[in-house]
Image 1 (cartoon, rainbow, N blue to C red):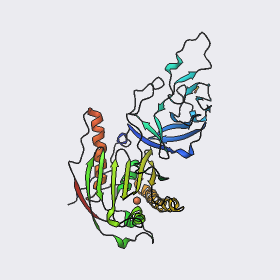
Image 2: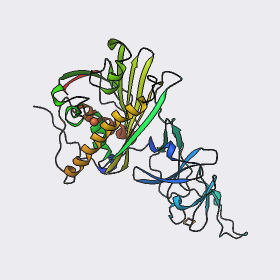
Image 3: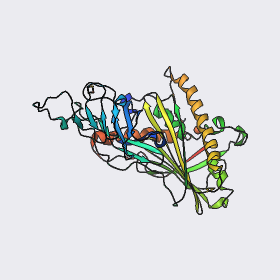
Image 4: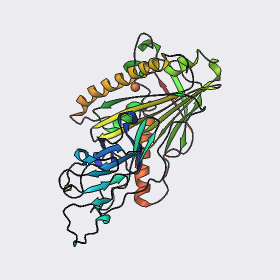
Length: 371
Ligand code: FES
Ligand SMILES: [Fe+2]
């Protein structure tokens, strides 16, 4: 009997994990001295770049009376709320001025803060660190520091190309992530005459191992029907090509393909925007075909096609999910999805108890499926 689990009975507060970096906006859409709206984990944010080009992220609500700060005036340094003109330093959120105060009023304005979030630019994206919810009474809390730097794509040479694409999906982060790591939908969702058909389905056997906060599909020669592999085969000996795929909490899938001095690397995230909406962002870096002009376009086309097929599928799935149906996870094709839920639970348990996180996998595992 296959073991059946119910993936969607998650309490809502276990849906979106705090204490991690998330991609907020593509960096090329954020210009100096301007303000942009973004939402992460249902938190409204205002994002911008100061005069020097450094990005920042603030909670999009004035600590005085909640006015959205994205409609404020920004001079490249301080952001002025449109309601009563309070001004805030955009990098730490500290209040700089309250125009209504008279000279003999001694309110300590430097103790007032608009919520501010650690913010970094990496590989085409502005990343924002979402800390664990602090004590209530925001407005006086200093910004939190991120414990580590924002994730970045692994690169194996100085010169490379970079491209990104994104798509919004009307499903929760969990369904977005399961869809991302689900090996069994390929032959049905990702069909194209130049790619593969349902008839190319065959048995696969892959080895997995635990890594901190996640799991790895161990380094292997990639399956002959993966996109970058097909491109790389034109360049390198088929046997010299290896691929490694990692998933780590909260939402990161990285794939590294190497073939001699050539490499292709991608970092894909599924970002929770609200409880029922997520966004997939794929950023890829590579050093092959750097001189051939149409390759970025070709790669974008191939990946764009896949992402659009996934997006369309999840759009349809969201119709079915509206009525909260019972769902199941089966072995072995859904085992990575099970690990994902177990990792999430282990992460939250570790937070609750203050103990080190207990990894759900005790060692390497081999999975078999047909796709
Ligand atoms: S609401 Fe922003 S200054 Fe009053
Ligand atoms: Fe897919």
